[in-house]
Amino acid sequence: MAQVISDGISNAIKELVEQIAPYVRFVPKYGGEVLAHDPDSDKKFVGGIYVYKDHVSLEFSQGASFDDPDERLEGKGKGRRHLKFEAVEDVTGKDAEGFLKQALRFS
Image 1 (cartoon, rainbow, N blue to C red):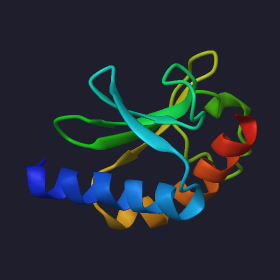
Image 2 (spheres, rainbow, N blue to C red):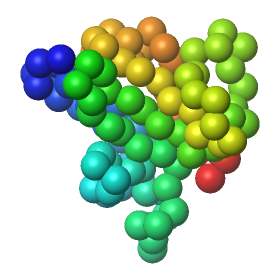
Image 3 (tube, rainbow, N blue to C red):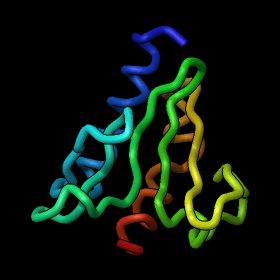
Image 4 (cartoon, one colour):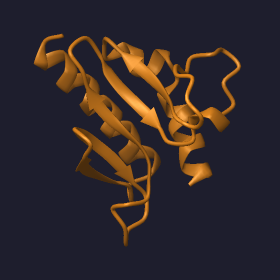
């Protein structure tokens, strides 16, 4: 994936987060940026944005608990789930906004 595409996807996710929850901070951690919702702690976060070779992933710490009737979330772990994006349009197409809102409610 070209850096221009991954940067565009990451920026689209960040803009969406800023619209939904302007208080959320992007903290570099674990090779990506976690979404820290607690203004007093970088250790409490709802998920993160990670850039990989072929996609950008939006990870949700409590994603296994989310309502996902269309089964867009990927992952089989105990708690985490993620969305994979290969194009900027995927951010809207995979309902990143709805999942981010759920993540913030679970926090």
